[in-house]
Length: 267
Image (cartoon, rainbow, N blue to C red; front, top):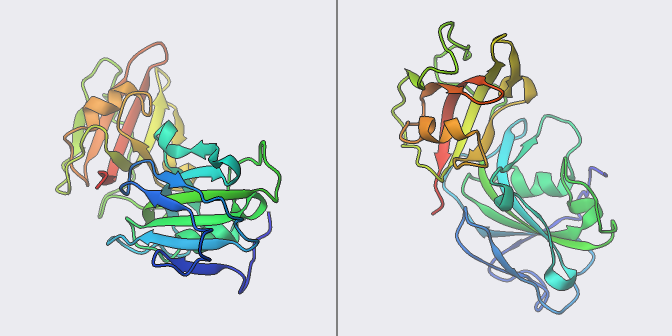
């Protein structure tokens, strides 16, 4: 994956700087899966970024972990390629100097949280980190729609709090408990929640997963199938800024401590 398109990446706004007849039309609300109509004309050769709507949150900056939903489809036949909306887990892009395509950098950095952006580009330039080039050639044109949930420092944590640890008396049979009360927005079932967490196996209590070790916050849709079932009841009704200890019983019991950093509800 090449890194740079200096001076070649064209920024268009939704008011019509793109070539007439070759601009896909995107409908739907931020946070919901976009509906994309692709015209019959040719897409052109150069990558094109279109800001479809502008959010009001913090702007993303280099060094951030950017969390975004992304829907990707082929220009030819408007065929779906992949979509994080289907899996209910937004993509996590770590802008720490490692290899990230320049088209993604231009699309995601410097944007306020809540912004929807469209990228039209060849597959070779359009696919970001951890997105495989499968079933398309590098020259095939793709249409990507990003909903930018936010940018967060890799070590983002509850203000003034130490890193989360598994309570010594937490067992899989125990009920969830609030370790720290938050005072921010309420987390609703079905919303997206931005978290840092640690996870330990039972009965060894060995930490087997940690968002801090993997590079920073993650985002999930708070519904069964997207997160462990125990998380849905334990986090619903909590507020941003909370720390919650969540046992997860079952065949492979786990113990979690989750810091709620943010929540996003589709507008």
